[in-house]
Image (tube, rainbow, N blue to C red):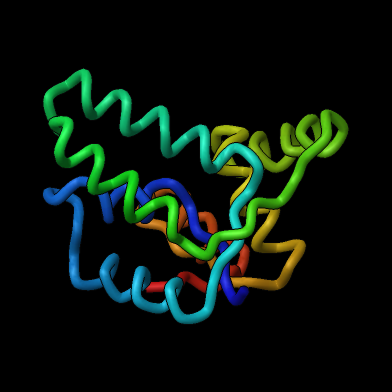
Length: 135
């Protein structure tokens, strides 16, 4: 595995209006090289799909297509315990991020890996602290 993948870029592969050439390039790279995500990533992605379904952004057919894509992704999920999760409070506070986004940042920093994200705030923090962005 060569980079960290976050929910924002993952969801771009599920919502047509969020897909770009850059997000498709990340998907191609992920399928070739594999990736890593923090422990909350599967739940964050599933929750966003449910929200998209409730808001009418995904019908049942599109949801099933998303499910098919997501279940084949070569993404390893890092485990977390309560101690490491609580440790993310400092990172979140230092960079004015949610704990969820701090988990992506921390994982990228601790593994010396780039981060694939389309979240502008998280990307700005990555640039500030020197974490390479994958696009």
